[in-house]
Every structure is written in structure tokens, then in C-alpha cells.
Length: 127
Image (cartoon, rainbow, N blue to C red; front, side, top):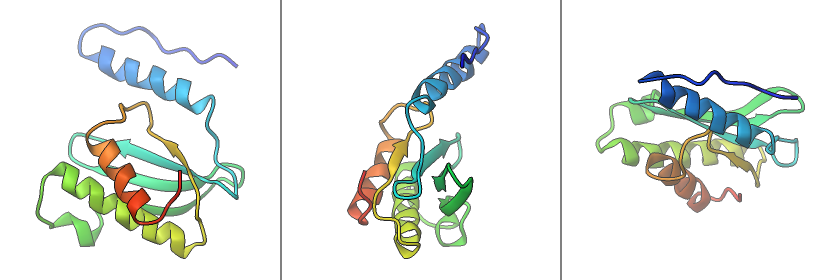
């Protein structure tokens, strides 16, 4: 199945490039019951992580910078991403999830995305 994204100009080019990368990554990655998908969604202000079983279509665990335990905390955006990674790993382990497939959502594996992944690994999730 072919997915197309219109080639944009100007400011819209970044969004179109992100969408193309995300489609390219999702062609190869799918979450199962044994190994669900850890999805990272990044915005300018916050970051969200979800553990999803694609076959059943269910979210098993999620965490965000909007959670009450993280929202008023100190630190920059990378520090908050680390907290989100630890929190989603704890919630996933409580549901019995040990290993996941990492879906960076078309973002570069650097900065906040890498901080979240490293914190989730330290908390016990295996990629």
C-alpha cells in the first residue's frame, strides 16, 4: 500500500518531512501482545509516550508531561522527558509488559526522544 504526502513549501515542509519519516518507520514496526509498541509523540511544549498493542487496538500504558506528578516539576524539557520515560516504564511493567518496540514517530533519535528512551531502559523496559 502506498502512502503519499504532498511536498510542501516553506514552513509546512518540516511537517511534511516528519510525516514521510513516520510513514517510513511505521511500515516496518507493529506492536503485538508479546511486544507492544512504545510510541513517542513530541510537541514544542510537551512529550507523550504510549505502549500500544496494535493487534488488539488497545493502549496498555501511557504517560505525558501533562500528568500531575510531572506537570509542575522543575527542569528543562529533557528532564521532563526522562520523567515521562520512567513513568511509562513503571506503568507498563505493572501491566506485565517487559519488552517493547520503539516507535520514534518520525523524530530524530536525539534530545528529548533519546532521553525518554534511555530513562525507559533504565527503568527496566527492554527494546
